[in-house]
Length: 110
Ligand SMILES: [Zn+2]
Ligand SMILES: [Zn+2]
Image (cartoon, rainbow, N blue to C red; front, side, top):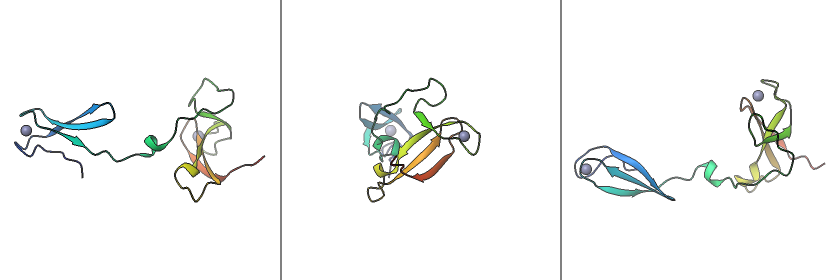
């Protein structure tokens, strides 16, 4: 549970970031406490480069040719589901570079 109010004066704590750590600081009495931040999927996703010619339009991560069924945009970002679910490493997610529509498909081996 994240601390939101100062235990001393009851003022709302202002979230502050210092490097990898997060603090909640009271603007009234100066109280501060390190906050435990839950890891989000963004934090878990490794920054790996897609070894292909990157198009300089829309989402720069969207390099996979896949026509979006929603908006018709022809490039999607590949999200490897194996990062999140180690027992399902044969699944990838294609996320539209334009509207963000995503579909779950099996990994293509060829
Ligand atoms: Zn305070
Ligand atoms: Zn789309």
